[in-house]
Amino acid sequence: MATATRTVVFTDLANYTQSVSRADRETLRKLLNDHEQFVHSVVASHNGRIVKNLGDSFMVLFECATDAVRASLEVVEQGQETAGLMFRASAATGDVEERQGDAFGEAVNMSARINAKTPAGEVWFSESTYHCMNGSEVPFETVGAFPLKGIAGDTSCYRAVTQDRCVLPDVVKAAVKNGSLVRIRPNESLPPLPPAPLLLFEGFEPGSPQLTRMMDLLPVLDPARLYMLVYTMAPSDRHDWLAAGRGLVVGTRVALDSALEAERSVVQRPVGTNTIILDMGSSADLELVMAGLALPAVPLADVVAGYSYDLMPDGRWVNRSPRAVLRVEVTPAGVRAKPLTPSISIQGRAAAGETALTNGSVIGTPSGDIRFLSFANPPYAGLLLSDSNVRMGISGAQVAQIGREPRHPGLALPDRSGQYNIRWCTGQRAARARESGFTLDRALAGRRQASVEAGNGGSCTVKALHDRLATYLLANDALQRITDQADATLGQMIVTGTTVIALRPPSA
Image (cartoon, rainbow, N blue to C red):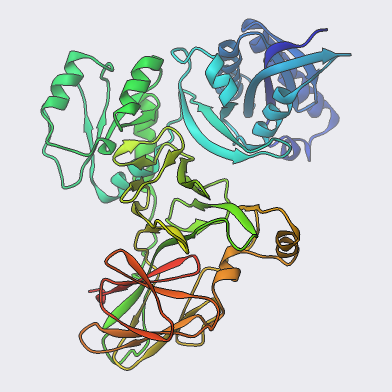
C-alpha cells in the first residue's frame, strides 16, 4: 500500500501488569475480551481501523485527526464507566505506510513515545495532530515540550481534556492557596477584589457583549491575571484571547469545582524562610540570597557552541527536566525563552512560542517574575534575576565562603550533573571536554570560589579565592571583575559561574 497521511492512535490498558498478576486464566480471558470488544466498538463508531492488537494495547489508524482524538477521548472517558477499564491514549499525525498487517512511519513512533509519557486516564497528542484537527470540536490544552526517545528535538504535546477532569494552571493553584482567586460569572455584579487578584471568568461566550461589559468594569490589571473557563473554543477566539496575554482553564464547571476543592484540601507543609544565621547568638547584618541564573556568552573556549537551562515550577534551574515550565537557550545570536507550559508570560503577555529576550524583559512564571539583564560583551550574555528562598545570614566580622564545596560556614553553588543541555563546538578540545565530564557549573566555578566578610551597616568585603575562575560584582547593572577584593553594599550582587548571589537586608 502506498504511503498516506494518517493519525495513529495507541490505546493502552493502564495498570495491566498489576491487573493480571494474580488473575486466573478465565479472568484474564474475560479482561482481554472486554478490552477488545470495547475498543473495537468505539473505534468503529469514529471511522477508525485497528491495525494491531498488542494484548494490553491497540494501534489504530484514522483518516481524520478530529475523529482520532474524539475516539481517544471516548475510550478514556467511557472505558471505566461502561467497561470498568482505565485507559491512556495518544495520537500523532503524519505519513504512514501499511505493510503486511502492520504500519510504519514517524507518526507511529511518535504516538508510541507520547503514549509512554501519558498518565493513566488522559489523552495526549502531537503538534501535527493539533494542526490537522478541528480545534472547535476538541477540548484541549498545552501540556509542554518533551524529549522523546528516537525523535529529534523536543516534541510539543497537547492534552485532550475529559469531562471529569480539569487541570489547574500553576498560577491558578497559587491563587487558590493565597486566597486571591476571584470567580466571575454572567449576571452577577463584580465582587470586591483583593490585592493582586487572579480573575477567572466562567460561563461567558468569548467575544460576547456580556464579557466585554464585565471586563470594562475591571480596574487596570495585568492581562496575565485574567483567565477564562472553557471546554471547547473556536480557534479564532482562542487565538484572540491568548494573544492578549490572558490564560485559559480548560474543563467543565463540575470538573473545575472538583479541582478547586481538591486544591483547597491539600495540607500544606509549613515552610520556613530557609535563612541560616551563622552565629545564633547575634542578629544577621546581611543575607546572601541565591538570586538568579548567570548565562555565560558563547562560543565558550572553543568547547560550548550553545546551551540551555530548564526552569522548574518551584523556581530552580536544572539542565533538563520533563517537568520544566520554561527553557532558556543561549546561542551566539542571543538568548531565547521557550515556554514549555501555558503558565509562562513575557512582558505580561502569554508566550506562545520562542521569544528573543531583550534587556529588561520580564518573564512571568509560577514561582514569580524573572527579569532579564543583558550585556553587549562577554563574559556573560545576560542574567536571569529572581530572588529565591535559598539564603544565608551573616553578621559582623563573620566570613562566609561561596563555592561548589565551600568550607563551613559557606553557601554552596549549584553543581548540576549531566551534559544534556550543551551544544558542543567541533574539534579535539570540545571532544576532550565532553569525555572528561565537562559541565558549565564545574568549569566556571571552583570548590572555593569567593568569600564574603560582613561589615557595619550592611557593607561587606568580597574576596576572590580562585586564581583562574572569575568572580564579578554587579553594581548599577554593570559587571566589575574582582581581582583581589572589593567593597560591596546591600543591593549589589555577586556573579560567579552560572550563579547570581544578591546582598540583601536580613529577613524580618
